[in-house]
Length: 100
Image (cartoon, rainbow, N blue to C red; front, top):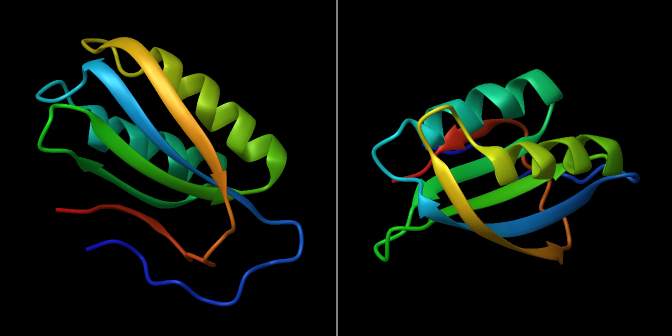
């Protein structure tokens, strides 16, 4: 149920991230959705079959830096061991949602 891509803004940046640790079953996806909404970040979050959480995030550089900092902490009951993050070209998402 993620947001659909649209035309990209000129100042838009994006990244794909994999978050490792105790990140499933602790509300990570829903907390990430709430934080993305607070920051104005667009994209999606989903659980991976290997226990990681995957994120696609788009926004301004400042929005993405703040979201990346949050990902490295996660919600209260998560334990983030590592975040692998790769810059990607934005796709133009218009919202942020949980993918299944």
